[in-house]
Structure formats: structure tokens, C-alpha cells
Image (cartoon, rainbow, N blue to C red; front, side, top):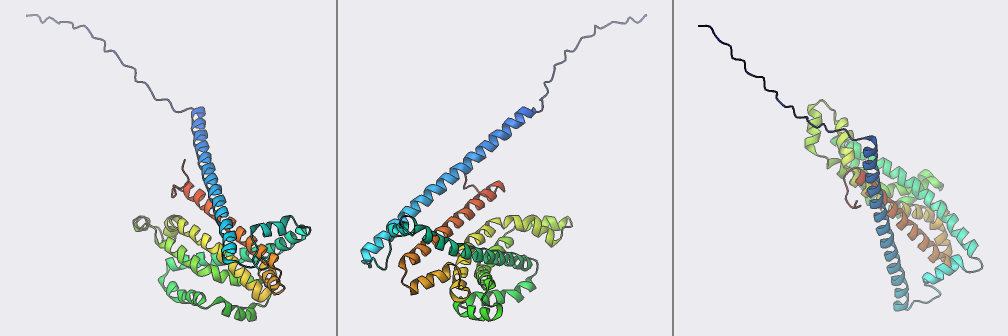
Length: 306
């Protein structure tokens, strides 16, 4: 029997076109970046607005409390000067320009001394905290010295520093650095030790050194503690500078306040105190703003809403 071949018609299989997802265009990416930048700018602007409103409210409350205490306690107007008295002495009296020049000249000296002491103390605290993190032996050897500097009253310690450094600007730098050192050291060391041990173990498994773990993990995670040290150190450095000027250098606001008190220049005394207080608050606010900005960019802070 002859085999008959049956031809089966070939059925065409329809092909379905699979849509391909096109890569986002340059314009789309630019739009996304612009939107993100705009949201970030709005978030920072909202934070600045809140900070200014809070600062203004705080200023109003402080001024009200200042004037209220003078009235309640019945302090003589010859001794106690209110907010309007200070404003008049600095801006409206015939000698206002000379008064401002005197205060600003002394303020410039004090801020220079405080800045140098702040930088020296903070850098020394950062170096020591890093060494403490890398070596327990170094910590056990040097921490008692830091505790000793902290426990000795600074007023009693300054005469010894004068014998070592003299009465030049260096005494103000050393005094400010001593005031800054211990609280900054404690905060930074705590921050460095708060790093995730699991991440450090991963770095060690892949052959990383303790210094690599410090640089990659511990230092970034210690940023909140580092900024806390900065905020604590700002008024401390100013206090150290004022103390050194009072006891040693004979310059700046510290010495100017002492001389004004001895000469019963009460307007100058109150104006000097008000100006250095305002400057301290402003510098603290700048440090707070820098902290929120940096931590937000690092994904470690949510205080500035987007």
C-alpha cells in the first residue's frame, strides 16, 4: 500500500509585539531632579522660617522677662538697665557710634579668641576620641588627664597657665580649648562607639582594617554626636575666652566688662552682656541649622520636612 502523505497546512502563529520600556529621557531626568531640588529647597526654607519664628518668640519672651524682673524686684534704674536703655545707648544717644565701636572692637577680640580655642579643643577632642576608639590602652592612659583638666576649677588653673604661656592671646586659646575638650571628647567618643558592630564585622570579614571600619562606619554614624559636641562647645569656648581676658590678657569683652564695672559704666556692662549673649545664641542657631542640613543630606535626620 502506497503511503499517502497528508499535507497539513502551516498555521501562522501571530506574534505579539512586546512593548519596550523606553529609558527616561534627559528632559524627564532633569524634571525629576528639578522637582527634587525644589522640594529640598522648600523644606530648607520651611525650616529656616520655623527657626526664625522660634528665635523671634524666644527673644520676645527674654526681653519681657528681663524688663519684668527689673520691675518686680525693684532694682534701681542706676544699676539695672532695661532693653530700651541698651538700645538707646547703642543706637540713639549722641555717642552711640562710639559706643558701638567700643563694643564691636572688644567683641571682635573675644570672638577671635573663642574661635581659636573652639577649633583647638574640638580638633584635639576628635583626635583623642579616634585614638580611644582604636586602642583601649590609649584611652586608659589619657582619659584621666582629660578628667583632671575638667575637675580642676578653671579660675584656679588659669594662673598656672599664665606662668606657662604668658599673658598673650595664647592663654585665651588654651583656656577655651580646655573648656571645650572634655564635653566634646565624651560626645564624640560616644558617637564613634555607637556604630553598628554588624557592619564593622562585615568589613573585617572582607579584609578591612579597624581604621577602615572607623572611616567607613564609625565616623559617619557619629555625626549627630559630633554636632552635639559643636553646640556644647560654642558657649564653652566663649566662656573660656571671657575668663582668660578677664584674668590674663587685658583685652576683649571679658576685660572690658571688668573695667566698666569698676568705673560704674553700667550702660557699657549691660550692653556688652547683651551683645555677647545674642552672638552666642546666633552661633548656636547656625550650628543647629548646619546639623539639620548635613544630617538630612546623609539621611539621618527628619527635622526638616520635605
